[in-house]
Amino acid sequence: MKKLLLSFIVAVIFSVPSYSQSLDYAYSTFIQSDFELPFRILWPMDFDSTVQYPVLLFLHGAGERGSDNEKQLVHGGDYFTVQNLTNTAPLIVIFPQCPEDQYWATVHIEISKDGSRDFQFTPDQGPGAALQSVLHLIDSLLLQPWVNPSRFYIGGLSMGGMGTLELIYNRPQTFAAAFAIAAGGNEIILTQKISDTPLWLFHGEADNIVPSQFSEKLFLRLQEQHSHVLMTLYPDIGHNAWDQVFSNTHLLSWLLSHARDGSK
Image 1 (tube, one colour):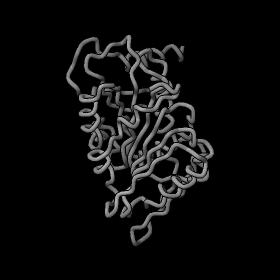
Image 2 (spheres, rainbow, N blue to C red; image 1 turned 135 degrees about the vertical axis):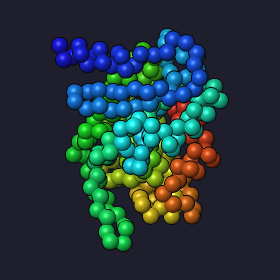
Image 3 (tube, rainbow, N blue to C red; image 1 turned 45 degrees about the vertical axis):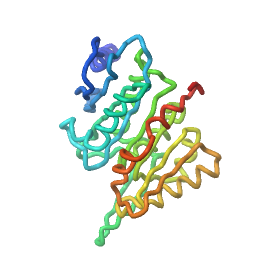
């Protein structure tokens, strides 16, 4: 009975448009057991439920946590709307929202008197409730007939970039490509499982919230493993490197150039 109920909830959540609509993020909620994960979903123009679309799931930063199901679109929402409108390969874009009292990544953060932060990443301890809910959401999406399982992409910024790396760690055979902006993680643990996923790292060299050394160490270690990894460092840019990413890169075309089945 429980499985039937969950299947019904997922079917309602993923009720899809049967008509051409303007590009806007629809409101929705994913419910798994007692955990509710609000999310916004951007459907392509002239959506056709018989077509399999690429999917991008984006994780926001700590400042956009909450339950309003709106703040998570502050950084990146407009970018993907414009890209979806102009790109020849439209995709489905999903922005889940992390609860105020939780964190996407499995990390302990201590802030010293001078404002510096010490991060202790432990992805091998298993995902917390928020990230676990995202994993369930991903599993549910992959069952939908309008999702192309070979073209499922993941990305995020700051806390969401950390969560992105942990999602790859937990689902190393799922994502066609990924990107992480101003992120961090335990590079020794992460590279045990994420080296097969094409990854683009972005970071501001003047970041005093999440130091760029996190991205640099991960980049070097993945290079040693002959991974498909790119890194872009922005001189004199602080923690808000996403402003540069969403205005000056060909991020979406790079993502869509990858597929897990090798197709183009």
